[in-house]
Length: 447
Image (tube, rainbow, N blue to C red):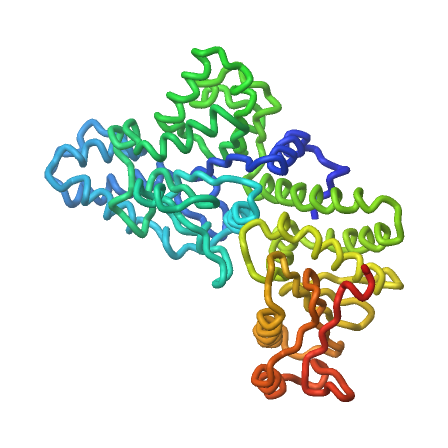
């Protein structure tokens, strides 16, 4: 995982600290979806595709005077003829794999950071990569219309230029972008004016973004301008000559991060996870429990930022928003337990909420909200089936490590029979309880 001590991007550290205090606003542009394996085209490429297609379908001369590399220019010309704009939007949606492209690293981290409450995400992209990057049991609400903005509260992905699976929501003409829907304008404007916002992979500044920023400049609200950050590899040396430079010529250089989106989100996620764990570790001070926690904390740093975020969410029962924040105590106790068990210091964090310690594979069940023991028991059955399907057999004994509950788990008879039918020898206890999974509890050490 990213090493805080060797940070060459102090600005990312500042932004991560903001995200810990309140959600950091992220505006994701086309550059986010251009990275592999998604490789979705940018606005200029889409414009050229649409221009070529419309030149075949429309009356000759309709597109005279348009800029083939400007999507708004082509769309404005199409909108001048009856049915032209609807045709343009159908061509736009069919021009690339917006609803089927493979999500990239940034998409996956963005989705998890949003679910964990570290960021708000506003995107001008039409693709569905962010919402499709999650596991099947995770749901990320999407807002792409006024009605949805009224119905959906809390953590949601705001698609201010529309969504490819609903072509009627797409905004591409100058008039549509100038008169951006009130909910979308409000979402962007309030964040620019009130807290730190990072524009990632954004080269073309939308009219409503430009208008809000100019209003801040006219009001001489310099503090708000200090809250605007840019992330784009094209800004490595300077953004001189870009739309951003024309809009914000006095922006300090440290607010320009000339790095790819994947690198930025990897560092941001790592810092959010590490700072959350550091806070717990510091509260334990130099106690024996604190040293055990630090041992586990050191081991989880072997994971990538994405793997670490995914590991915490895979452990959680149930699976709500903000697992790391709600599960602080269960995860604290889990790390202490594992640290005490790792007498030789060896510990390996694995996918699926598993940890290998002293030849025992612990499957973590962390109750991050109030949950009945029987719910945990059934979750154990589901988790074990999924882990065996994904990873096959193991030479290690398997145990379920339970945190966050006061009562012991007593699986009902029908559940025991289901488990007995599906388990292998290494998955069960020996002795009088043979045939049931072995549940161990963090309280055996932490109390």
